Amino acid sequence: MDWLLLRGLGRESAHWGDWPEQLRRARLQDSFHTLDLPGTGLHRHLPSPTCIAGVRQFAERASRHLPRPLGLIGLSLGGMVALDWALHRPEDCANLVLISSSSGLSSPWRRLRPAQWMPVMRMLTQADSDAREQAILGLTSNRLVSSVVAQNWQAIQRDRPVRRLDVIRQLYAASRYKPPHLLPRMPTLVLASDGDRLTDWRCSRDLAESLECRLEVHPNAGHDLPLDDPQWLIAQLDTCFPINHPFQAGTD
Image (cartoon, rainbow, N blue to C red; front, side, top):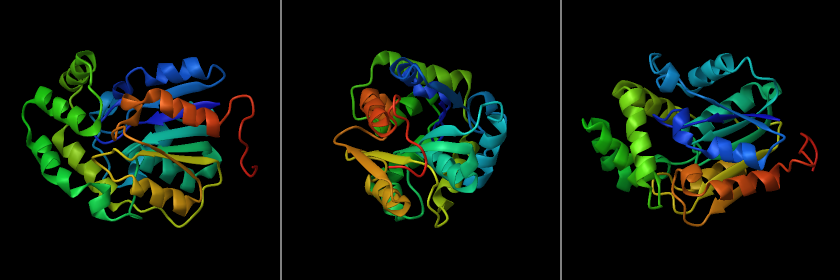
C-alpha cells in the first residue's frame, strides 16, 4: 500500500520530522510519501488556494506519479484536504486517516478554541520567525519539545519561509470547509486528542459520527499528535489497517 501524508496549516513535509521513517520501519510492506501543499515547502512560491477544493485539486495533480488507490493521512488542514479528496474521487483512495481535523460540521469556537484566538493573531503578526516557531510548538504540543526539534522548525522557516498571506488564505479555506453529506467508500479512521488546546477533540467526534467510522482519542497529547506520540498513532494504524490482513472496502 502506498500512503500519502498531508500536513496542516502553514506546515510543510519537513515538519513531520522522522515520523514517516518510523512508519516505514513499522510497516515494511507499505510505502509512505509526503507532499508540500501550495504556499509551503517546495511549493511556497505558489499562492495557497482560498478553498479546500483548490488545495485538493493541486494535491491530486502533484501526486499523479503515485500508484492509485492511495492511503491518505491528513493532519489538521491536511485532513480536510484528504477528506475532500476521498469524497470527490473515491477511486483514488483506499484508506483514509484524519488526525486532529475539523470541518463546518462543528461550531467555530470548537474548531479554534476561543482561548487561542488572540495567541493565533499574535503569531500571525510576529516578525521574529524563531519566536513564532517556538510559539507554534508551545500551542500545538503538550510535551517538552527538544531543542533539536525547535531548532529544526526554526531552520525550516528561515530556509523556506511561509508567507503570512498564504497562512491567512489557508485559514480562510479551512474556516469555510464543510464536507458534502456523503459517506466515504473506503475504511476510515479519525484520531484526536482530549488534550488538544487548539481544536476541541469533539470536532473529530462530529466527523466520525457523520462519516460513520471509527474514532480513537488520545488522553493527553497536543494538536500535533505525530510530534507528541508518534508510536500511539502507528499502533492505531496497525489496529485499523493491519498489514497481514489488509482492510478491503465493503468488508468488516
